[in-house]
Length: 547
Picture (cartoon, rainbow, N blue to C red):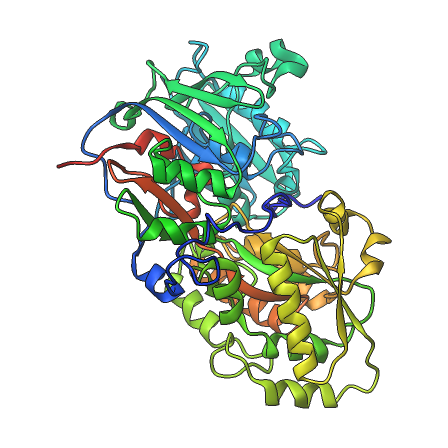
């Protein structure tokens, strides 16, 4: 079962006029997307705080289903909260690199053996000392069938406590992506005693956390808020939380915008980045964007209307990605040449950037530019053409993308129509082959928690559960080779090869990147602006802005 953090969020709803008040069409003064974008800072992190905050209030799009990160119901909202509470063996940084975390050192002692030296003197929020036994047990819990990141442990044959402060992971083959995955949920360390004592209450409003992070869960008032407080006995004295108490609430887009404009909220990571439009020009808020892996893609099903790769490429060539960004994301998105964003480029970034700009697969010099004539030529080569059915759930971004695909199809001589699927059923496209027979394309925003493109492109393997048209033994062999390559430069070359092969087959139509977008009240600063926030203690960095 894949655990690559596709959001499966279906409650965003249509954008209201409060959200788009500064854009033309809602009766307010028209401000173009380019004017909005001029006020957005592009950074890995917002400026460092100069002082502490006694209390702060943060908003999210919805309430987490669970705070147990191994639970299948865990998603982006769970990560946003628990990144401050639970720590990992390997820690992502705001610039998307990784550094030692609860493991002070890690080493491949053989190509198949990864040894962790566990940091000493770390206390759980219960007051008990973290041990190597807790680490080994936590990793075994993550690897268990049905756990949220269990597929990251596919090459693991044994996890053992091999010393007082040492844990050894034995692999069936080398797996460089595994180490990167430990910066996500796969590397979280729980206190075994605390988790087992809570039983089914763990991860629920009646449970406690079992972690070591700079903040701890004080209360989860179901339906209302989650309150985090500074952990007094945090081990890293250089990274003690600047915020004493953080109240996290949830609301729809318009309510989040209003809370930020009125000063009720100190900040929010926006799920719907077009909500930043009225906030970017406001005197009381600042908007920053940073690299993320999140991209809106249209996934091709095995229904058959797009069985021929030439038709998939033709649609990709005919898509107006700039128009989608303007209409759905207030111009704050970035046309996507790849199905994963540059937040995955945690190493060899220039090599990946150059490759992304020159992907071929029949594309023009810039892979994201429209080329209607080239698309028409591809369509003319195909004799067996069916009506293309595009699914949407009625939410703004999916509707905009569905209409853009239908428009692109008509311009190049293809017949296409849209079907509406209830939001509560939309996720069935991932799990139910019969459900996928309704449509040739469905759209979702998809992100991974690893800063390695191989961590995404392994989804192109024949046994993938998130793509259904790329079945290539050579691709499968290349995935295995890339995962086994521990040298970053060599693995980058293999990742570029995988990206090119993906582009040639095009099992998904990549539409637009959705960079991490964070809004802050003018008095506060310090948090990451990159996708690292899902696995990083961002609230510990939140503090007062200097004069």
